[in-house]
Image 1: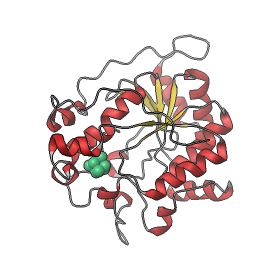
Image 2 (image 1 turned 135 degrees about the vertical axis):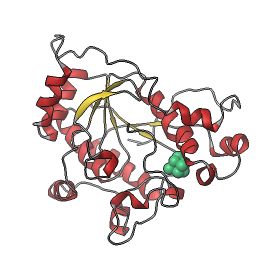
Image 3 (image 1 turned 120 degrees about the vertical axis):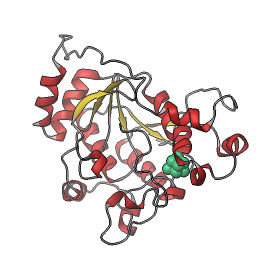
Image 4 (image 1 turned 90 degrees about the vertical axis):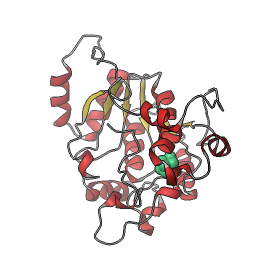
Length: 267
Ligand code: SF4
């Protein structure tokens, strides 16, 4: 089954939105208030108590809980980095009906697409594809190499807006971020309200180390992105990712020439 399957309909090509407006659309502050959290039986539950329970739960247990609670309005984000391999495996084991999506910036590495296809073939799942305007349209509207001049605006167009579309029909999404990824993620809870996108968010691998991730991949012989073996601990777009070099933090190779550490998906 093909990995890339769906690009939701959208209006394109309007010059009415500037890069700075796109950037602002990623800014927290206009967020919706948390919705009532209900358990699988429909009973209203205390999200603080639930979050505390999930903190003590392992990744498989947390994902099983999320599937019981939110399916089919639960959406697993995938980037086809090493943590995606783990999350896809855990989710599929819990429910072959689990729903997955990815953001295609049209600037992903070839290895990322081949990893997508390998995972799609192994599990027989579909990875719904969300994307922004074409690169040609972006150049026509905002000039060449926006990623060099205004990377926040470029991420707003190519990641944040597609993400809003992806999440618009869900009540909870699942991310592969971990506390060891970076200082900005060090305080990530396993479960909570995502103010940026206005739905619940589960980070089932929040407390996993690199060793935990690789042990799971190796023990289960999972397909994984071969760029990890080529010195890329963190993988994004081709123009904004390079190996960080020895001794540097895993995400130091992302936007290495800019004062930027996140793409705007994780508040
Ligand atoms: S990571 Fe770079 S190329 Fe990709 S969307 Fe962000 S700024 Fe643009």
